[in-house]
Image 1 (tube, rainbow, N blue to C red):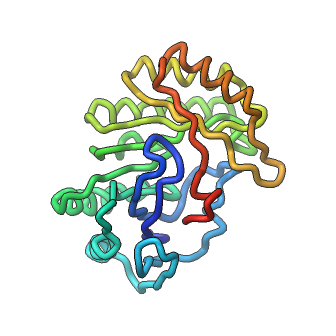
Image 2: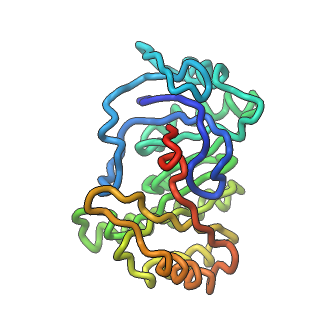
Amino acid sequence: MIKEIFSSIMGEGKYIGRRFIFVRFAGCPLKCIYCDEESKSYLNRVEKIPGSGEFETLKNMDVEDVVNAVDKLRTPDLFAVSFTGGEPLLYSKKIKEIAEILKDKGYRTFLESNGLFPEKVFYFDIASIDIKLKEHFEFIKDNEYKKLYKKELETIKKLYNLNSDVYAKVVIMENTDIEDVKRIAKDLSDIGDITLCIQPVTPNGDIKSPSQRKLFEIMEACGEYLKDNVMLTIQMHKYLGML
């Protein structure tokens, strides 16, 4: 269930630069071409000292173990606890147990999800939903992509109606169609006051990031619907060599 728990800086999205504790869950049903999670084969590892990058591996990690690990990594500058992955909502029942305990202890809860499971969503203080584009997959049928996109929007709408501070993030590649991202902006504006984070893909092999001009053009196009609720974020943690 748990890959790792550690303290670091949020490297992307609306709260980039804030101190988080990350509870990373294993597994995801999507196979995005830029994802690097499958290369991490370890399980149940917990950082020993906040920000040290030194880990110990536990035999088991149940709800109590997760809460204890979070407590040990808490620092005065902590902003929130992120449930991330993989896809954390594969374990929604366990996360709900953990989140309720953490809320009672005064922690903010943060969800990072691909939005595939709107039926499993419950209240988080903050939520980041990663909207996928067709080019994020080596192969996906049109009807499958439409179903995925519909679920992502349903997840965002449900979180918005629960009064979570929900925002969307979309990874932009070299050949991303501006009109595809503009459509996402329109659909988000129909839901409510939601920020869209434009994130150029981190280059890797044949995967290339877009030009600066294209990023400006995409932001301007999205601004037609979202006004200034559009922001550009990079994967800062990768550039800084952080977890």
